[in-house]
Image (cartoon, rainbow, N blue to C red; front, side, top):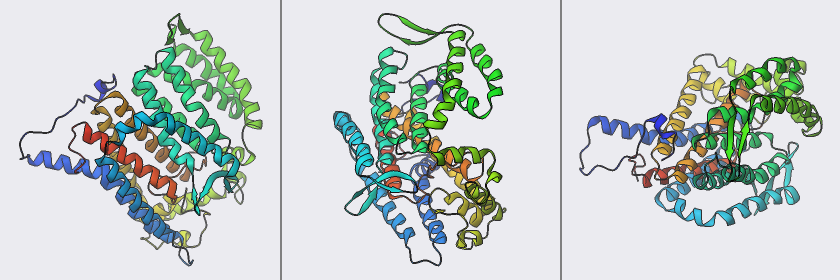
Length: 439
């Protein structure tokens, strides 16, 4: 089992040999079923109503497409949960990697554009977004690498970076900054789960923080660089190679921060599109352009605040009806939720996501082997990061990145990929002898 399991205090549980369970067992089983299946199904049903609310006064039926896609996704998840797909996929990872790269390249050369980005390909009249499925594929690739190569070895760490590099780059140049960030968070979480020390995780992300400070608040580097250097009081072994130990000391850490701070302004100018720079700038001060780039964020905050404690009622949101927020049925669906269900509704949805993520962590802790454990924790990281960033974006605590809210934002590729992930987790739980699937 993986080292992190000791933190959870979990171990594999085998099915009981008798048919009667105590009331406590039955209650826990019902809670586990709700956490794994009830939450995604409930979110899909509720979001269909919210999407319908955003389309009032129009002839569009996106709510119907959302529900229909959800039914297809759920049926797919149930089939996967009952199958041995998680075993078979290990034998076809090379082909899956090739197909993932090929689909992302297809977006680059024959993809369709919308809202300033080229992220979709047209298949039989349907717009498919390969980057949504690439998230799941990357999790499977990384799980296979880390299950066979510990991240503290040169081979394990190097292969992890090499595995994610090409998909990340192809997504970044679409451009899709949000999905690129999801890939990064998945990688860091899976490295940590497979045994990499937290201090090394901080070391890996510290150049990024230095780069951001170098662009936004250069004076902050005066405090950040000494702090990260002092955190490493003695040389850290980054990775073990057959010939030597690669050691990182305080001086090296400080040097990395300085280099990142110098390079960051050039990446800011030449690496990001103009609209991406505008989003990051307006996140800090949306009032700078209230009728332009800051419009989405300001209107989202006003819409959520209009719901107050109990909300105006489903299909009763005035701000939603008047279409103050463009594309609110996709990335800004949480603002519709806030207006129509209020603060209490938002708390309920956030709590539901917490329950789902905790259930996934439980499944990862009780998985049959390291590969399956890493797959589930990667999916949990994917869901958690998207939920956190999307909600933060709508309430003004994060920049607008275009990350959808799982099972709630309109997007057929996203909802299919999310249910596919759920099916993999359910299959792994079933193989691990857990009683949470009900199949």
